[in-house]
Image 1 (cartoon, rainbow, N blue to C red):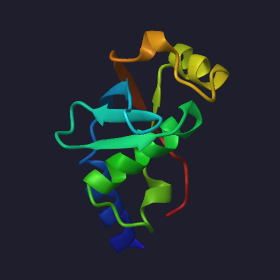
Image 2: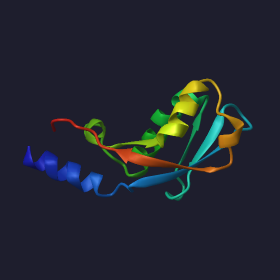
Image 3: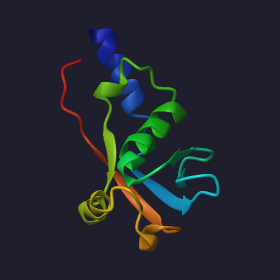
Image 4: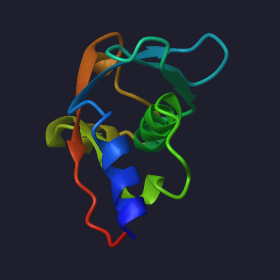
Length: 113
């Protein structure tokens, strides 16, 4: 258990407190999502419903976090106002959020390792 806690701490300390996320309409389908403060980190989503999952997945892949540790890692979400707006527009991302920098902040996960 100590080893798992050490590994968890190692990965958690690599993660930034905040992410700057930019969403653009994709030429292919859906939306391209770039995580501006992690060079080369990006993902693609078909709708707003996938945004939270795919941003977190891209960050975990960027830091090469093992699958067994991911459930214990913090999650990133935009501020409540933007989160509610995205949930309301589940199938599309509102035009006023495109091309802007949206801040996602860490939300701690409470779990037993």
